Length: 459
Image 1: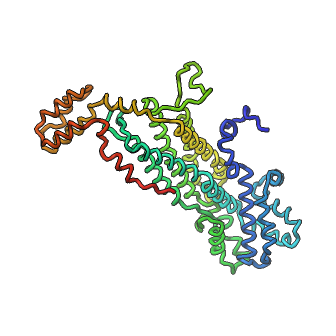
Image 2: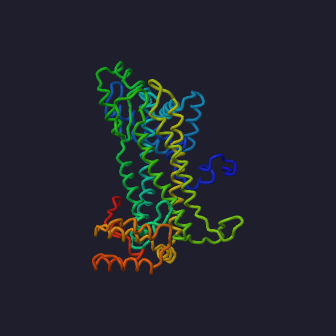
Image 3: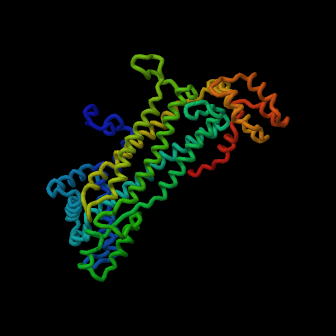
């Protein structure tokens, strides 16, 4: 039983239930299982695809037995691997010994057990294991959650496409927009980055100690090892990278973490805007029975979900940016500093998932105060001066901007003042009529049409 009160990381304690599913990808157990999968698939590939001399094709039953080692891998098996690691002080070699121990129960396979880890360096196994676990995590966990957020924002944008809202530039009242248009801006940004993320390759290498197939070619000089490597990496679902040192250079991993940082940064921006809109009273938060907003101020309903999301997105980015900067760097042909930091990939994703769930929770708890939106628009009539001076420019009226500046800068205009000013303008009757009918609530340009014209790319 884990005592959450004594855990150092909030991911393992406070947020554990929110990210429990990530154990299948980023725990020590998961990394061992993915390494085991790669080792077994390489052995099967050598026997049945390469048909390497001194091996023989495995039967369907034998392949099933081998794959069961990874599919049925449990905590007890993980402990056995850790036992071998304590003896060898080497995490990948421990997996080789674990497999060989199991194969003793199958003598016909065991006679070929020296072809487990054949020609491999640890990084051959590691880089493919990380590539596969990240691929599975993306497909099963991250992509569904992130696309769900985009769809939620798109739905909100459609719902509020015509609901006018005062804009704020430099924190000051500015030309009106609609709630839906501001939301569709976020959707468009996220979808663009989502598409970029999906285009990034998942590279993998499988070419031996320093990337040259040195030992392979001595043992089997007639085998096309470069071709075998390419086929194997593609076979397990990654993009082959033939030009490496001992390690896959992690450039595509760095691209991925940079892309994730951009996504998180966009969402930090959105969280801060939502925080501001809540503080303006544009959005209200649904009350939850028994919940306390402040330990001393009973009236408060704090925007804690958006604050939590902002903080956790920031923590995730601190990890992702370090990974993106560090992983492409390795001294000469190999050092182990990349292995050290890669063990924290799950930390970055853990904070990201917590943040995404907090943001979704926050969105589901907010409602719009339409009266507050309307009042704010009606109390800031001076935002119409942009429209008036632009119409004056159409008629080549000199110093159009300056005239409106004198009328409005730093002032609160009344409806009478604006209408009086418009009536004395020497402009066409249709334009004058349009300006007299204009209100902040109707001065939203193409905001609604822009929402209608947006085509959601994800399904």
